[in-house]
Amino acid sequence: MRVLVVEDDRETAQFLQKALKESGHAADIANDGEIGLAMARDSSYDILIVDRMLPKRDGLSMISTLRAEGARTPVLILSALGAVDDRVKGLRAGGDDYLTKPYAFSELLARVEALSRRGVLGERTTRYAVGDLVLDRLSHKVMRGTEVILLQPREFRLLEYLMQHAGQVVTRTMLLEHVWDYHFDPQTNVIDVHVSRLRSKIDKGFAMPLLHTVRGAGYVVREGEG
Picture (tube, helix red, strand yellow):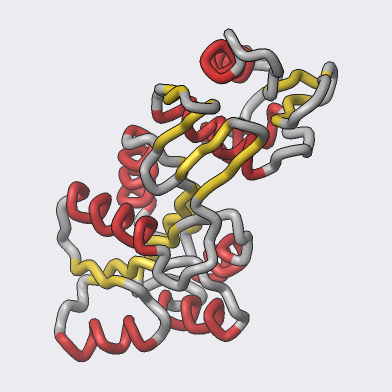
């Protein structure tokens, strides 16, 4: 799952990013409402976590603008304002859930995962298939034919991103930014190591390989020869 955290308190934002990553999710940060709005327009985010009180553009204005533009991404609002009227305003602005500060991360994570399972506004793809390889985002289950493939959280996210872009070449930089949230030299071998492990799990022992290396470009999941 890919999450956008819109939070102006940098320490809080970095804590949420780190905790989400340790839970197997990818997370980006925006520190004000204008940047958050621009980043949230990227439809590849599964969930938005939005602080209500933000500089430049407040959280409710950001959310209502996204909804007016037709964005369907589920939104969890974070706020120190916990009165009934405050929660109602948040939900009416387009939020899907409302969590009052201070909160326990375990509760935030449970609410984020519940929003993902519910598919609050529907129409988000929850299942990907390439040939006989099937990935189910809701159950976190991967199968190749009748065989269940057991993946670590990072391997699952890597395969999920590749299958989201099935048939397209995905570069190392894209993987670092969307699967690891790293922004450094794409020549690092962390990608090669994880791709090798993933390939051994989804291709080894099967007649047709699905995960291909495109020399000098990146990787692609597809049927047929690399």
